[in-house]
Image 1 (cartoon, rainbow, N blue to C red):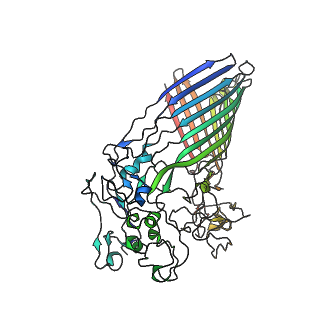
Image 2: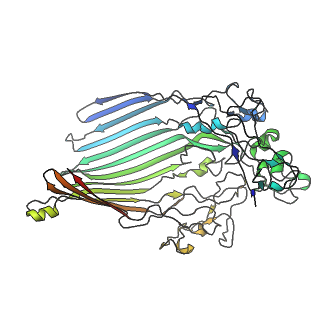
Image 3: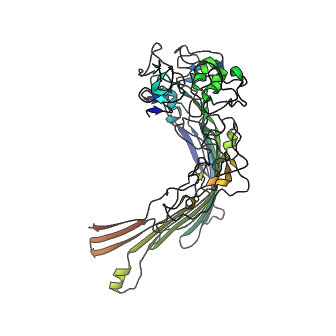
Length: 581
Protein backbone atom coordinates (compact mmCIF):
# COMPACT_ATOMS: atom_id res chain seq x y z
CA UNK A 1 0.00 0.00 0.00
CA UNK A 2 1.16 3.55 -0.72
CA UNK A 3 3.84 2.53 -3.25
CA UNK A 4 4.18 3.00 -7.01
CA UNK A 5 5.93 0.90 -9.64
CA UNK A 6 6.92 3.93 -11.75
CA UNK A 7 6.83 7.71 -11.58
CA UNK A 8 7.61 10.59 -13.93
CA UNK A 9 7.40 14.30 -13.22
CA UNK A 10 7.76 17.42 -15.34
CA UNK A 11 7.61 21.11 -14.68
CA UNK A 12 5.10 23.35 -16.46
CA UNK A 13 5.28 23.06 -20.24
CA UNK A 14 4.89 26.30 -22.19
CA UNK A 15 4.88 26.81 -25.95
CA UNK A 16 6.06 29.99 -27.66
CA UNK A 17 6.75 28.83 -31.21
CA UNK A 18 6.90 31.24 -34.14
CA UNK A 19 7.54 30.55 -37.80
CA UNK A 20 6.67 31.93 -41.26
CA UNK A 21 4.67 29.87 -43.76
CA UNK A 22 5.24 31.57 -47.14
CA UNK A 23 3.96 30.21 -50.44
CA UNK A 24 4.15 31.49 -54.02
CA UNK A 25 2.78 29.73 -57.08
CA UNK A 26 2.30 30.22 -60.79
CA UNK A 27 -0.08 28.26 -62.98
CA UNK A 28 -1.28 28.40 -66.56
CA UNK A 29 -4.03 26.75 -68.56
CA UNK A 30 -3.37 26.11 -72.24
CA UNK A 31 -6.10 25.13 -74.69
CA UNK A 32 -4.01 23.21 -77.21
CA UNK A 33 -7.03 22.25 -79.34
CA UNK A 34 -10.78 22.22 -78.96
CA UNK A 35 -10.41 18.71 -77.55
CA UNK A 36 -7.25 19.05 -75.45
CA UNK A 37 -6.61 21.29 -72.43
CA UNK A 38 -3.29 21.31 -70.55
CA UNK A 39 -2.70 22.73 -67.09
CA UNK A 40 0.72 23.20 -65.49
CA UNK A 41 2.20 25.08 -62.60
CA UNK A 42 4.73 25.19 -59.83
CA UNK A 43 4.55 26.26 -56.21
CA UNK A 44 7.42 27.41 -54.02
CA UNK A 45 6.60 26.35 -50.47
CA UNK A 46 9.70 26.47 -48.28
CA UNK A 47 9.83 24.84 -44.86
CA UNK A 48 11.12 27.19 -42.18
CA UNK A 49 11.04 25.21 -38.95
CA UNK A 50 9.50 27.19 -36.07
CA UNK A 51 11.69 28.73 -33.39
CA UNK A 52 11.01 29.27 -29.72
CA UNK A 53 10.77 32.89 -28.61
CA UNK A 54 12.95 32.13 -25.58
CA UNK A 55 15.52 30.12 -27.59
CA UNK A 56 14.62 26.92 -25.77
CA UNK A 57 15.45 23.65 -27.45
CA UNK A 58 18.17 21.03 -27.80
CA UNK A 59 20.13 19.01 -30.31
CA UNK A 60 22.00 15.76 -29.88
CA UNK A 61 25.28 14.57 -31.41
CA UNK A 62 26.31 10.96 -30.97
CA UNK A 63 29.92 11.74 -31.88
CA UNK A 64 30.09 14.45 -29.22
CA UNK A 65 28.40 12.14 -26.70
CA UNK A 66 31.03 9.47 -27.23
CA UNK A 67 33.79 12.12 -27.02
CA UNK A 68 32.38 13.54 -23.74
CA UNK A 69 31.94 16.98 -25.32
CA UNK A 70 29.52 19.19 -23.40
CA UNK A 71 27.58 22.38 -24.10
CA UNK A 72 29.15 25.79 -23.59
CA UNK A 73 25.69 27.16 -22.70
CA UNK A 74 24.82 24.58 -20.04
CA UNK A 75 28.06 22.93 -19.06
CA UNK A 76 26.32 20.52 -16.68
CA UNK A 77 24.12 19.09 -19.45
CA UNK A 78 24.80 15.51 -20.57
CA UNK A 79 27.56 15.07 -23.13
CA UNK A 80 26.29 15.37 -26.70
CA UNK A 81 23.34 17.62 -25.79
CA UNK A 82 23.68 21.15 -27.16
CA UNK A 83 21.70 24.39 -27.11
CA UNK A 84 21.23 27.55 -29.15
CA UNK A 85 24.42 29.51 -28.57
CA UNK A 86 26.63 26.47 -29.01
CA UNK A 87 28.61 26.37 -32.25
CA UNK A 88 26.55 25.03 -35.13
CA UNK A 89 23.20 24.92 -33.33
CA UNK A 90 20.47 26.80 -35.28
CA UNK A 91 17.71 28.57 -33.39
CA UNK A 92 15.16 26.08 -34.75
CA UNK A 93 17.38 23.20 -33.51
CA UNK A 94 17.41 21.77 -37.02
CA UNK A 95 18.10 23.09 -40.49
CA UNK A 96 15.23 24.40 -42.62
CA UNK A 97 14.42 23.36 -46.20
CA UNK A 98 13.95 26.54 -48.27
CA UNK A 99 14.27 24.90 -51.71
CA UNK A 100 10.96 23.08 -51.85
CA UNK A 101 9.24 23.34 -55.23
CA UNK A 102 5.96 21.60 -56.02
CA UNK A 103 5.40 21.11 -59.76
CA UNK A 104 2.10 19.89 -61.17
CA UNK A 105 0.88 18.92 -64.62
CA UNK A 106 -2.53 17.85 -65.88
CA UNK A 107 -4.39 17.29 -69.11
CA UNK A 108 -8.02 16.88 -70.12
CA UNK A 109 -9.00 15.35 -73.47
CA UNK A 110 -12.39 15.04 -75.16
CA UNK A 111 -11.59 12.28 -77.69
CA UNK A 112 -14.72 12.65 -79.82
CA UNK A 113 -15.40 16.33 -79.35
CA UNK A 114 -19.07 15.78 -78.47
CA UNK A 115 -18.78 16.60 -74.75
CA UNK A 116 -19.90 13.12 -73.70
CA UNK A 117 -16.44 11.68 -73.03
CA UNK A 118 -13.50 13.13 -71.13
CA UNK A 119 -10.16 11.57 -70.22
CA UNK A 120 -8.07 13.24 -67.55
CA UNK A 121 -4.61 12.65 -66.12
CA UNK A 122 -2.22 14.46 -63.84
CA UNK A 123 1.06 14.37 -61.94
CA UNK A 124 2.10 16.36 -58.88
CA UNK A 125 4.92 16.55 -56.37
CA UNK A 126 3.82 18.09 -53.08
CA UNK A 127 5.86 18.85 -49.96
CA UNK A 128 4.08 18.75 -46.65
CA UNK A 129 4.16 21.71 -44.29
CA UNK A 130 5.48 20.25 -41.05
CA UNK A 131 3.11 20.68 -38.14
CA UNK A 132 4.41 22.89 -35.32
CA UNK A 133 3.91 19.85 -33.10
CA UNK A 134 6.66 18.11 -35.05
CA UNK A 135 9.28 19.96 -33.00
CA UNK A 136 7.07 20.78 -30.04
CA UNK A 137 8.80 18.56 -27.52
CA UNK A 138 12.28 19.63 -28.64
CA UNK A 139 11.67 22.88 -26.76
CA UNK A 140 10.59 21.07 -23.60
CA UNK A 141 13.74 19.05 -22.96
CA UNK A 142 15.81 19.56 -19.81
CA UNK A 143 16.34 22.07 -18.35
CA UNK A 144 13.24 23.78 -19.84
CA UNK A 145 10.28 21.48 -19.14
CA UNK A 146 12.15 18.62 -17.62
CA UNK A 147 10.48 15.21 -17.55
CA UNK A 148 12.43 12.97 -15.22
CA UNK A 149 12.11 9.64 -13.44
CA UNK A 150 13.54 8.79 -10.03
CA UNK A 151 16.52 6.45 -10.33
CA UNK A 152 15.02 4.00 -7.87
CA UNK A 153 14.93 0.21 -7.78
CA UNK A 154 11.74 -1.44 -6.54
CA UNK A 155 8.61 0.23 -5.15
CA UNK A 156 8.52 4.05 -5.18
CA UNK A 157 7.22 5.97 -2.19
CA UNK A 158 3.85 7.57 -3.04
CA UNK A 159 4.16 10.49 -0.62
CA UNK A 160 7.85 11.13 -1.43
CA UNK A 161 8.57 9.64 -4.90
CA UNK A 162 12.08 11.11 -5.13
CA UNK A 163 13.25 9.42 -1.95
CA UNK A 164 16.37 7.44 -2.88
CA UNK A 165 19.74 6.26 -1.68
CA UNK A 166 18.65 4.59 1.54
CA UNK A 167 18.37 1.03 2.72
CA UNK A 168 15.11 -0.71 1.83
CA UNK A 169 12.37 0.29 -0.59
CA UNK A 170 9.63 2.87 -0.98
CA UNK A 171 8.60 4.88 2.03
CA UNK A 172 10.30 2.38 4.33
CA UNK A 173 13.78 3.45 3.26
CA UNK A 174 16.23 4.19 6.03
CA UNK A 175 18.71 6.97 5.41
CA UNK A 176 17.26 8.00 2.04
CA UNK A 177 17.26 11.59 0.76
CA UNK A 178 14.85 13.56 -1.40
CA UNK A 179 16.50 13.80 -4.84
CA UNK A 180 13.71 15.83 -6.49
CA UNK A 181 14.98 18.41 -9.01
CA UNK A 182 11.78 20.48 -8.73
CA UNK A 183 10.67 23.28 -8.68
CA UNK A 184 12.62 24.96 -11.48
CA UNK A 185 12.41 28.38 -13.20
CA UNK A 186 10.76 28.65 -16.64
CA UNK A 187 14.04 29.50 -18.40
CA UNK A 188 16.85 28.54 -16.04
CA UNK A 189 20.20 30.21 -16.07
CA UNK A 190 23.35 28.07 -16.39
CA UNK A 191 23.77 28.40 -12.64
CA UNK A 192 20.24 27.17 -11.83
CA UNK A 193 19.77 24.58 -14.58
CA UNK A 194 19.22 21.05 -13.32
CA UNK A 195 19.71 17.91 -15.38
CA UNK A 196 18.32 14.87 -13.55
CA UNK A 197 19.34 11.32 -14.27
CA UNK A 198 17.13 9.61 -16.84
CA UNK A 199 15.96 12.94 -18.26
CA UNK A 200 13.86 12.65 -21.41
CA UNK A 201 15.25 14.25 -24.58
CA UNK A 202 13.25 14.41 -27.80
CA UNK A 203 15.29 15.88 -30.63
CA UNK A 204 15.23 16.46 -34.38
CA UNK A 205 17.84 15.24 -36.87
CA UNK A 206 20.51 17.69 -38.06
CA UNK A 207 18.25 18.56 -41.00
CA UNK A 208 14.61 17.61 -40.78
CA UNK A 209 13.09 16.88 -44.20
CA UNK A 210 9.31 17.39 -44.41
CA UNK A 211 7.50 14.54 -46.10
CA UNK A 212 6.84 14.78 -49.81
CA UNK A 213 4.26 12.98 -51.91
CA UNK A 214 4.45 12.21 -55.62
CA UNK A 215 0.88 11.66 -56.86
CA UNK A 216 -0.55 10.54 -60.18
CA UNK A 217 -4.16 10.25 -61.35
CA UNK A 218 -6.02 8.99 -64.40
CA UNK A 219 -9.78 9.04 -65.01
CA UNK A 220 -12.36 8.36 -67.71
CA UNK A 221 -15.78 9.97 -67.53
CA UNK A 222 -18.80 9.40 -69.77
CA UNK A 223 -22.17 11.10 -69.89
CA UNK A 224 -25.15 9.00 -70.94
CA UNK A 225 -28.63 10.16 -71.80
CA UNK A 226 -31.34 11.15 -69.36
CA UNK A 227 -28.91 12.66 -66.84
CA UNK A 228 -26.80 9.55 -66.16
CA UNK A 229 -23.03 9.77 -65.78
CA UNK A 230 -20.30 7.20 -65.02
CA UNK A 231 -16.67 7.69 -64.04
CA UNK A 232 -13.70 5.53 -63.12
CA UNK A 233 -10.57 6.95 -61.46
CA UNK A 234 -7.15 5.57 -60.65
CA UNK A 235 -5.26 7.38 -57.89
CA UNK A 236 -1.72 6.53 -56.84
CA UNK A 237 0.96 8.15 -54.72
CA UNK A 238 4.26 7.53 -53.01
CA UNK A 239 5.32 9.41 -49.88
CA UNK A 240 8.89 9.77 -48.62
CA UNK A 241 10.47 11.30 -45.50
CA UNK A 242 7.52 10.52 -43.25
CA UNK A 243 7.89 11.30 -39.56
CA UNK A 244 8.54 8.51 -37.08
CA UNK A 245 10.12 8.15 -33.66
CA UNK A 246 13.54 6.49 -33.37
CA UNK A 247 14.80 5.63 -29.87
CA UNK A 248 18.05 7.28 -28.86
CA UNK A 249 18.89 4.55 -26.38
CA UNK A 250 17.07 1.20 -26.66
CA UNK A 251 18.12 -1.56 -24.33
CA UNK A 252 20.76 -3.85 -25.85
CA UNK A 253 20.15 -7.58 -25.47
CA UNK A 254 23.10 -9.51 -24.07
CA UNK A 255 22.78 -13.32 -24.13
CA UNK A 256 24.16 -15.63 -21.45
CA UNK A 257 24.16 -15.69 -17.67
CA UNK A 258 26.08 -13.93 -14.95
CA UNK A 259 29.33 -15.41 -13.75
CA UNK A 260 31.11 -14.77 -10.42
CA UNK A 261 32.01 -11.15 -9.67
CA UNK A 262 29.80 -9.63 -12.36
CA UNK A 263 31.51 -11.42 -15.23
CA UNK A 264 30.28 -13.00 -18.48
CA UNK A 265 27.67 -10.34 -19.32
CA UNK A 266 29.87 -8.09 -21.45
CA UNK A 267 28.77 -4.45 -21.64
CA UNK A 268 25.96 -4.66 -19.06
CA UNK A 269 26.83 -2.04 -16.44
CA UNK A 270 27.69 -3.28 -12.97
CA UNK A 271 28.73 0.05 -11.42
CA UNK A 272 27.12 3.43 -10.99
CA UNK A 273 23.48 4.56 -10.72
CA UNK A 274 22.33 2.65 -13.83
CA UNK A 275 23.54 -0.65 -12.38
CA UNK A 276 21.90 0.14 -9.06
CA UNK A 277 18.60 1.03 -10.72
CA UNK A 278 18.82 -2.18 -12.76
CA UNK A 279 19.50 -4.30 -9.69
CA UNK A 280 22.88 -5.52 -10.97
CA UNK A 281 25.25 -3.41 -8.90
CA UNK A 282 28.43 -5.46 -8.65
CA UNK A 283 26.92 -7.97 -11.08
CA UNK A 284 23.82 -10.07 -11.16
CA UNK A 285 23.20 -13.30 -9.29
CA UNK A 286 25.44 -16.07 -10.56
CA UNK A 287 23.51 -18.10 -13.12
CA UNK A 288 20.86 -15.41 -13.65
CA UNK A 289 20.25 -14.19 -17.18
CA UNK A 290 22.27 -11.20 -18.32
CA UNK A 291 19.20 -9.57 -19.89
CA UNK A 292 15.90 -9.24 -18.07
CA UNK A 293 13.14 -6.66 -17.97
CA UNK A 294 14.46 -5.52 -14.58
CA UNK A 295 18.01 -4.63 -15.63
CA UNK A 296 17.20 -2.65 -18.82
CA UNK A 297 18.49 0.62 -17.37
CA UNK A 298 21.92 -1.03 -17.08
CA UNK A 299 21.65 -2.14 -20.72
CA UNK A 300 20.51 1.06 -22.44
CA UNK A 301 22.63 1.73 -25.54
CA UNK A 302 23.94 5.13 -24.42
CA UNK A 303 24.76 3.83 -20.95
CA UNK A 304 26.80 0.98 -22.38
CA UNK A 305 28.49 3.26 -24.92
CA UNK A 306 29.44 5.92 -22.35
CA UNK A 307 28.85 4.73 -18.77
CA UNK A 308 29.75 8.10 -17.25
CA UNK A 309 27.10 9.98 -19.28
CA UNK A 310 24.55 7.49 -20.58
CA UNK A 311 22.38 7.26 -17.47
CA UNK A 312 21.64 10.99 -17.75
CA UNK A 313 19.48 10.28 -20.81
CA UNK A 314 16.30 8.23 -20.48
CA UNK A 315 16.32 5.08 -22.57
CA UNK A 316 13.72 2.76 -24.06
CA UNK A 317 11.06 3.19 -26.70
CA UNK A 318 9.05 5.61 -24.58
CA UNK A 319 12.09 7.58 -23.42
CA UNK A 320 14.44 9.79 -25.44
CA UNK A 321 13.84 9.70 -29.19
CA UNK A 322 14.75 11.35 -32.48
CA UNK A 323 11.75 12.68 -34.43
CA UNK A 324 13.09 11.18 -37.62
CA UNK A 325 12.09 11.53 -41.28
CA UNK A 326 12.92 8.05 -42.57
CA UNK A 327 9.52 6.36 -42.99
CA UNK A 328 7.64 5.94 -46.27
CA UNK A 329 4.22 5.04 -47.67
CA UNK A 330 2.29 4.42 -50.87
CA UNK A 331 -1.33 4.23 -51.98
CA UNK A 332 -3.09 2.82 -55.02
CA UNK A 333 -6.83 2.99 -55.48
CA UNK A 334 -9.66 2.70 -57.96
CA UNK A 335 -12.88 4.67 -57.56
CA UNK A 336 -15.87 3.79 -59.74
CA UNK A 337 -18.94 5.99 -59.53
CA UNK A 338 -22.37 6.27 -61.09
CA UNK A 339 -24.48 9.40 -60.85
CA UNK A 340 -27.91 10.54 -61.92
CA UNK A 341 -28.15 14.29 -61.86
CA UNK A 342 -30.93 15.91 -59.90
CA UNK A 343 -34.09 16.02 -61.95
CA UNK A 344 -37.56 16.97 -60.82
CA UNK A 345 -38.06 13.65 -59.03
CA UNK A 346 -34.84 11.65 -58.71
CA UNK A 347 -31.09 11.82 -58.07
CA UNK A 348 -28.57 9.09 -57.29
CA UNK A 349 -24.89 8.91 -56.40
CA UNK A 350 -23.15 5.56 -55.93
CA UNK A 351 -19.44 4.87 -55.68
CA UNK A 352 -17.15 1.99 -54.92
CA UNK A 353 -13.49 2.29 -53.84
CA UNK A 354 -11.00 -0.53 -54.06
CA UNK A 355 -7.63 0.49 -52.66
CA UNK A 356 -4.45 -0.53 -50.94
CA UNK A 357 -2.39 1.63 -48.59
CA UNK A 358 1.00 0.58 -47.22
CA UNK A 359 3.36 2.43 -44.88
CA UNK A 360 5.91 2.00 -42.10
CA UNK A 361 4.08 4.02 -39.44
CA UNK A 362 0.87 6.01 -39.29
CA UNK A 363 1.06 9.77 -38.82
CA UNK A 364 0.97 10.69 -35.12
CA UNK A 365 1.30 14.47 -35.09
CA UNK A 366 2.89 14.74 -31.66
CA UNK A 367 5.64 12.11 -31.70
CA UNK A 368 6.86 11.16 -28.25
CA UNK A 369 7.73 7.48 -28.54
CA UNK A 370 8.91 4.66 -30.77
CA UNK A 371 6.33 3.41 -33.25
CA UNK A 372 8.10 0.38 -34.76
CA UNK A 373 8.87 -3.03 -33.30
CA UNK A 374 12.57 -3.17 -34.15
CA UNK A 375 14.30 0.24 -34.37
CA UNK A 376 17.10 -1.39 -36.37
CA UNK A 377 14.74 -2.75 -39.03
CA UNK A 378 12.09 -0.30 -40.21
CA UNK A 379 11.36 -2.51 -43.22
CA UNK A 380 9.94 -5.03 -40.77
CA UNK A 381 7.06 -2.65 -39.99
CA UNK A 382 6.22 -1.94 -43.64
CA UNK A 383 2.63 -3.10 -43.95
CA UNK A 384 -0.96 -1.96 -44.17
CA UNK A 385 -1.80 1.59 -43.14
CA UNK A 386 -4.10 2.02 -40.19
CA UNK A 387 -6.58 3.58 -42.67
CA UNK A 388 -6.28 0.76 -45.23
CA UNK A 389 -9.96 0.06 -45.84
CA UNK A 390 -9.76 -2.16 -48.92
CA UNK A 391 -13.42 -1.87 -49.98
CA UNK A 392 -15.78 1.08 -49.51
CA UNK A 393 -19.27 1.37 -51.00
CA UNK A 394 -21.58 4.38 -50.69
CA UNK A 395 -25.00 5.05 -52.15
CA UNK A 396 -27.23 8.02 -51.57
CA UNK A 397 -30.51 8.79 -53.32
CA UNK A 398 -33.24 11.41 -53.26
CA UNK A 399 -36.65 10.52 -54.72
CA UNK A 400 -39.69 12.80 -54.84
CA UNK A 401 -43.31 11.92 -55.50
CA UNK A 402 -44.79 14.09 -58.24
CA UNK A 403 -47.56 12.15 -59.96
CA UNK A 404 -49.58 14.00 -62.58
CA UNK A 405 -53.27 13.66 -63.27
CA UNK A 406 -54.35 12.46 -59.83
CA UNK A 407 -57.63 13.65 -58.29
CA UNK A 408 -57.24 16.53 -55.85
CA UNK A 409 -57.48 14.68 -52.50
CA UNK A 410 -55.33 11.79 -53.75
CA UNK A 411 -52.70 14.14 -55.16
CA UNK A 412 -52.63 16.04 -51.87
CA UNK A 413 -51.90 12.82 -49.95
CA UNK A 414 -49.50 11.18 -52.43
CA UNK A 415 -47.43 14.03 -53.85
CA UNK A 416 -44.73 16.23 -52.29
CA UNK A 417 -43.07 13.37 -50.39
CA UNK A 418 -39.30 13.05 -50.41
CA UNK A 419 -37.38 9.88 -49.60
CA UNK A 420 -33.61 9.86 -49.01
CA UNK A 421 -31.82 6.59 -48.11
CA UNK A 422 -28.05 6.37 -47.54
CA UNK A 423 -26.01 3.15 -47.54
CA UNK A 424 -22.42 2.91 -46.34
CA UNK A 425 -20.42 -0.34 -46.31
CA UNK A 426 -16.73 -0.42 -45.42
CA UNK A 427 -14.16 -3.15 -44.88
CA UNK A 428 -12.85 -3.73 -41.39
CA UNK A 429 -10.01 -1.59 -40.08
CA UNK A 430 -6.61 -3.30 -39.84
CA UNK A 431 -4.96 -3.72 -36.47
CA UNK A 432 -1.74 -5.10 -35.02
CA UNK A 433 -1.34 -8.10 -32.72
CA UNK A 434 1.21 -7.37 -29.99
CA UNK A 435 2.84 -9.68 -27.48
CA UNK A 436 2.03 -7.51 -24.48
CA UNK A 437 5.46 -8.21 -23.02
CA UNK A 438 9.06 -7.24 -23.70
CA UNK A 439 10.28 -10.52 -25.16
CA UNK A 440 12.95 -8.71 -27.20
CA UNK A 441 14.23 -7.17 -23.94
CA UNK A 442 14.87 -3.88 -25.77
CA UNK A 443 12.20 -1.83 -23.94
CA UNK A 444 10.74 -0.53 -27.23
CA UNK A 445 7.27 -1.72 -26.18
CA UNK A 446 6.03 -2.88 -29.60
CA UNK A 447 6.90 -6.59 -29.64
CA UNK A 448 4.78 -8.84 -31.86
CA UNK A 449 4.34 -12.62 -31.74
CA UNK A 450 5.26 -15.21 -34.35
CA UNK A 451 2.61 -16.24 -36.84
CA UNK A 452 1.58 -19.89 -36.86
CA UNK A 453 1.62 -21.09 -40.47
CA UNK A 454 -1.63 -22.43 -41.92
CA UNK A 455 -3.88 -21.23 -39.08
CA UNK A 456 -6.61 -18.68 -39.84
CA UNK A 457 -6.29 -15.78 -37.37
CA UNK A 458 -10.05 -15.09 -37.42
CA UNK A 459 -12.66 -17.30 -35.73
CA UNK A 460 -15.80 -15.98 -37.46
CA UNK A 461 -17.87 -16.46 -34.32
CA UNK A 462 -21.36 -14.97 -34.45
CA UNK A 463 -21.75 -12.51 -31.58
CA UNK A 464 -25.26 -12.61 -30.17
CA UNK A 465 -25.10 -10.24 -27.19
CA UNK A 466 -22.75 -8.20 -25.06
CA UNK A 467 -23.34 -10.58 -22.16
CA UNK A 468 -22.31 -13.62 -24.20
CA UNK A 469 -19.59 -15.86 -22.86
CA UNK A 470 -16.02 -15.01 -23.88
CA UNK A 471 -16.06 -17.92 -26.32
CA UNK A 472 -18.98 -16.26 -28.13
CA UNK A 473 -17.27 -12.88 -28.26
CA UNK A 474 -13.97 -14.19 -29.56
CA UNK A 475 -12.89 -12.81 -32.93
CA UNK A 476 -9.25 -13.86 -33.03
CA UNK A 477 -7.96 -17.40 -33.06
CA UNK A 478 -5.47 -17.70 -30.21
CA UNK A 479 -3.74 -20.62 -31.92
CA UNK A 480 -2.70 -18.44 -34.87
CA UNK A 481 -0.18 -16.52 -32.76
CA UNK A 482 2.75 -17.62 -30.64
CA UNK A 483 4.62 -15.36 -28.21
CA UNK A 484 5.34 -17.81 -25.42
CA UNK A 485 4.18 -21.37 -24.87
CA UNK A 486 1.32 -21.58 -22.36
CA UNK A 487 -1.24 -24.17 -21.28
CA UNK A 488 -3.97 -22.29 -23.18
CA UNK A 489 -1.76 -21.92 -26.25
CA UNK A 490 0.87 -24.68 -26.40
CA UNK A 491 2.36 -23.32 -29.60
CA UNK A 492 5.56 -24.77 -31.00
CA UNK A 493 7.32 -21.64 -32.29
CA UNK A 494 7.53 -19.09 -29.42
CA UNK A 495 9.57 -15.94 -29.91
CA UNK A 496 13.13 -16.44 -28.76
CA UNK A 497 14.09 -13.96 -26.00
CA UNK A 498 16.16 -11.13 -27.43
CA UNK A 499 14.50 -11.37 -30.84
CA UNK A 500 11.34 -10.08 -32.48
CA UNK A 501 8.29 -11.96 -33.74
CA UNK A 502 7.75 -12.44 -37.46
CA UNK A 503 4.09 -11.39 -37.52
CA UNK A 504 3.69 -8.23 -39.58
CA UNK A 505 2.08 -4.98 -38.60
CA UNK A 506 -1.67 -4.50 -39.23
CA UNK A 507 -2.00 -8.00 -40.67
CA UNK A 508 -5.56 -8.66 -39.43
CA UNK A 509 -8.74 -6.76 -40.32
CA UNK A 510 -11.58 -6.11 -37.94
CA UNK A 511 -15.28 -6.71 -38.67
CA UNK A 512 -16.91 -5.05 -41.67
CA UNK A 513 -19.06 -2.01 -40.90
CA UNK A 514 -22.50 -1.43 -42.40
CA UNK A 515 -24.64 1.70 -41.99
CA UNK A 516 -28.12 2.43 -43.36
CA UNK A 517 -29.62 5.85 -42.66
CA UNK A 518 -32.57 7.60 -44.25
CA UNK A 519 -35.05 10.41 -44.15
CA UNK A 520 -38.68 10.99 -45.17
CA UNK A 521 -40.05 14.49 -45.53
CA UNK A 522 -43.19 16.15 -46.81
CA UNK A 523 -44.30 19.70 -47.48
CA UNK A 524 -48.01 20.26 -46.74
CA UNK A 525 -49.39 23.39 -48.45
CA UNK A 526 -51.96 25.10 -46.24
CA UNK A 527 -52.40 28.46 -47.90
CA UNK A 528 -50.62 30.42 -50.58
CA UNK A 529 -47.87 31.61 -48.22
CA UNK A 530 -48.32 29.13 -45.40
CA UNK A 531 -46.85 25.59 -45.42
CA UNK A 532 -46.19 22.84 -42.89
CA UNK A 533 -42.90 20.93 -43.30
CA UNK A 534 -42.62 17.43 -41.81
CA UNK A 535 -39.31 15.53 -41.60
CA UNK A 536 -38.42 12.19 -40.05
CA UNK A 537 -34.80 11.00 -39.93
CA UNK A 538 -33.47 7.60 -38.93
CA UNK A 539 -29.88 6.64 -38.20
CA UNK A 540 -28.91 2.96 -38.26
CA UNK A 541 -32.39 2.01 -39.41
CA UNK A 542 -31.84 -1.75 -39.06
CA UNK A 543 -30.28 -1.30 -35.60
CA UNK A 544 -27.30 -3.25 -36.92
CA UNK A 545 -24.28 -3.37 -34.58
CA UNK A 546 -20.90 -2.53 -36.13
CA UNK A 547 -18.38 -4.19 -33.86
CA UNK A 548 -15.11 -2.55 -32.84
CA UNK A 549 -11.78 -4.26 -33.26
CA UNK A 550 -11.02 -6.90 -30.63
CA UNK A 551 -8.46 -6.87 -27.86
CA UNK A 552 -5.20 -7.55 -29.68
CA UNK A 553 -2.49 -7.39 -27.04
CA UNK A 554 -0.98 -10.36 -25.21
CA UNK A 555 -2.15 -13.71 -26.63
CA UNK A 556 -1.67 -15.14 -23.13
CA UNK A 557 -4.45 -12.92 -21.76
CA UNK A 558 -7.84 -14.48 -21.05
CA UNK A 559 -9.59 -11.65 -22.93
CA UNK A 560 -7.32 -11.76 -25.97
CA UNK A 561 -9.22 -11.56 -29.25
CA UNK A 562 -12.55 -10.64 -27.65
CA UNK A 563 -14.80 -7.91 -28.99
CA UNK A 564 -16.21 -5.85 -26.14
CA UNK A 565 -17.76 -2.79 -27.80
CA UNK A 566 -19.42 -1.45 -30.93
CA UNK A 567 -18.22 1.28 -33.26
CA UNK A 568 -21.68 2.72 -33.86
CA UNK A 569 -24.72 3.63 -31.80
CA UNK A 570 -28.15 2.04 -31.56
CA UNK A 571 -30.96 3.09 -33.88
CA UNK A 572 -32.03 6.71 -33.47
CA UNK A 573 -35.15 8.43 -34.82
CA UNK A 574 -35.67 12.16 -34.83
CA UNK A 575 -38.49 14.18 -36.33
CA UNK A 576 -39.54 17.75 -36.80
CA UNK A 577 -42.51 19.88 -37.75
CA UNK A 578 -41.90 23.36 -39.10
CA UNK A 579 -44.33 26.06 -40.08
CA UNK A 580 -43.09 28.08 -43.06
CA UNK A 581 -44.68 31.45 -43.73
